[in-house]
Image (tube, rainbow, N blue to C red; front, side, top):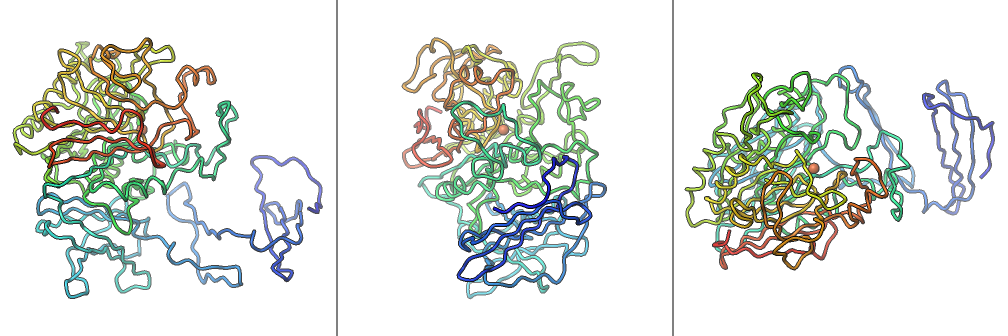
Length: 606
Ligand SMILES: [Fe+2]
């Protein structure tokens, strides 16, 4: 390497422009020249590298027009783009957008489908067409929908033939030079007496390290390799490996929470928020993966729309007083919450009762049938009450609920419906607190739904329905049978692992538990709130909490090394013929399942 120029320390706020020239020198060899210049174009330093093998020179060309902070719109546009030369390769199969993906559900004859677009301009075609394949060839219109808030177009087709598989396409910009057709298949409702495979996905960070801040040297544990930044070890999106696994297995995919984190892949914006219509589209990460062959119906529970800090509580339907979430309520504007819900749940089956809660925030809890299975979907965050002292403004203590009256009435109705059908109930988080500290003592965590009275009411309804409860959110995968009066007289709940997470939790009770199973850390447990449960399986991080805490002082529990975490997805096989659930828990990168799974649960024992 030949250097020229005077090296001198540069300041962080300085703009330095780097220009790299690649000059062919014959016989597949290139000369590289890199020059650094200041904002005025004056050279600061340069370096040269001769005889570089052309095979080593691979990469891409990026043109970026980022938004100006003030209005959220683009600052520049491009025209007359062209490239030339032997080293430029065109890969049209990698082209993306404006239609990014589609999600659908099928509930009897009702098809609901949401097409997610990239941000489009004010002058661009404002609507999307849904078309289906004719038997003899060609396409026919099934519906037209506007590109609404969040750049999502939502369709509802009330008379779909659920008995037959059908090709569809989502068409944008028909007749223009930018026309795009996104194709997929709506599977036939697998209503026979075979198996229905239900995938569970939750907690999908885009990257471990945020991309806009410097690295933290203390973040690294002894024995862990550096993560880098733009590397496979740090970037989780687009979850290629896990997505490939998921394409093989489930017929229905439920995204049960934390599809989107506001502090990844860049730190949370703290300035005044842009108009929601201008916001970056919050694509539900993994459920958007299946393309061009979307998985079957997606019963996305959608869940609370964003990652809240662990919060004790909250009249969550109301604005948080002074933006303090500890006093309960939403810290984001209702329009923003509704936008996120629209993107993540507008393709869900129709809600049981669509009446919004306070601030006009929409709801999506309800029931549906698919694959010969009866499903319920509840929102265990939205209706939960409480605040930092659990007292009303007059100072009176109030009882803590999880589901609230409306959802409790709904679950009561669902418990009596569809007799004889296997039943699954989607929720967001564990209804109990399965967590221990570095000394193996039961730990409080207000992020779980462990309020004693509310938990009991909710669990009794699920038990009466004879349903298996399915959730995510905790990052720590677990399978428990809840206790009501004893340790094992309630329903079973399966909490799927995080697809990719930063914050870790552990369940390593000191001294072991009574009535253990074969897998470690199983048996009868009383959580920090006094709730009883029988732990059937748990998938802890691969290093103990004590080892983690010895290496990392303080309260932070973020762990970046995927080799030391247990991340993946859940799968429930509803075996209608042999009348049993087979509950599986898979790592993101293949075999085998986590210890303690698969777990067989006969229908009569639910
Ligand atoms: Fe999460």
